[in-house]
Length: 318
Image (cartoon, rainbow, N blue to C red; front, side, top):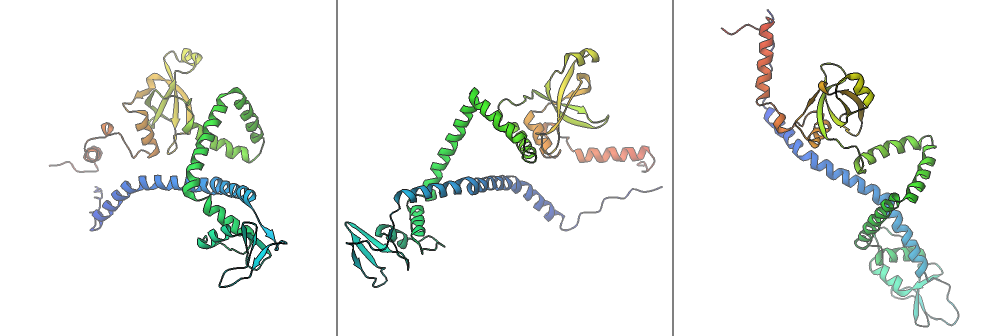
């Protein structure tokens, strides 16, 4: 008679390993949440905010740029001395020579940049001084970030309002038609659109309850969301009430399979949609408290021992 092997006794590091795993279970969810938000913000910062700042900076430089090439006639020139570059006066303005070039910029621009030079900036041209000045004076993050967020939210609001109007939907449908004709772009766009529509669309499918159904074969139970009562022809052919189900896939409940099954072949589950989503995303790890077995480990062990006794693989207790 073959005696079943008993599980190995836990080693001395078992409590430490178990504590570390529990700590990871506590720390990872908030940590990953922060990482996702940082990643999303880095994309927005790199692809939207920085190019916007650059464009606005160029517009400001263009509007305030005052660069003289050479010393004009009638200007009162002062030679360089004591670390102060050469300069000249023209009316009420004083211009300073930029490095070894023949370009001259207003003294307030030169002084502001010289007193607080940006890190890593090469100040050797008139344009470099103006770029540094504009970033110091107008484009500091403490000023641009609130304005950017306000404009970004306003743009989203106006886009939503435009889409609610008939003209907006018509223009958007034309744009999507062009995208769908692009061989590679249309595949990426379709996948991203499915995810965003599932997350943000207010008219998404309403799940009224959660059931368990044998999918894809008998003996394999899976969670499904009830989306409706199916087609009349199928109900007439089945001769009983039927249900339309969305069978989600783990760990992304946004995707899955749609099927229609008799209502008698489903089991109503006493859980909410949020609890079902947590169960699916966690691949079955997170079970609602009221659905958990009490002393499930002891029960499972007792059932296994009972089955082994019945099959003769384990001696019955004296």
